[in-house]
Amino acid sequence: MSEKVDIKKALLAFNVIITEGKRSGDAYTFNGVSAQSDFDGYAIALYNDYVRLDIYFHNKIAFTYSNDRERKLFLEKIESLYSKN
Image 1: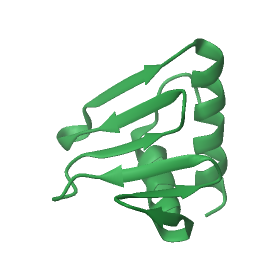
Image 2: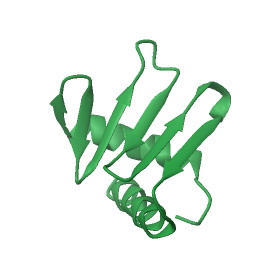
Image 3: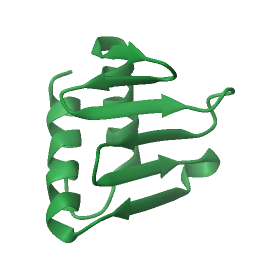
């Protein structure tokens, strides 16, 4: 995955996490990445301890991270989840 967030791939990774992951409360976790959605599914979040990617209606995003290294590792992890399908 490139430096920019590819929303389509992130959504596909979200699907892998909720399909393959272990549920804990409102979230699912798979290979170190957690995913959850709001009650109507219009907003989703992918996150770990250092990075959070929120995707909202009309593909608007909020991407927060502690540093560039963690951002890069997170995007690589998302890519690896997407690539498994």
